[in-house]
Image (cartoon, rainbow, N blue to C red; front, side, top):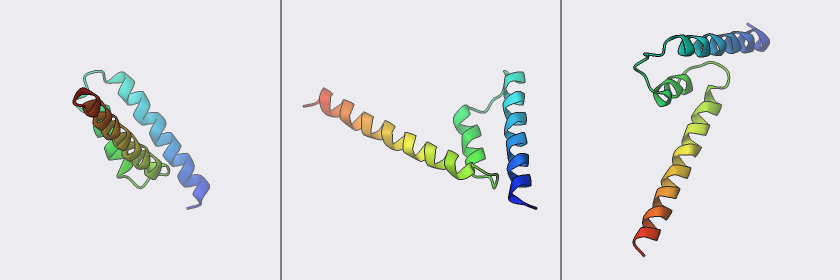
Length: 73
């Protein structure tokens, strides 16, 4: 398969996933769990999702350290 076909299939999969999410309001998975599943897949852009999650985790941990340092000088 060409890269273009794989990219189109990946984009279609994301559109379907987003559509299903809006239709199923009683989903038991959190957005974090869904993103984690996506990050572990082989579809195009999955590595970007994983990198984004890692970066967000680092920023949250850093902010928590700053907040605790300000509370306990």
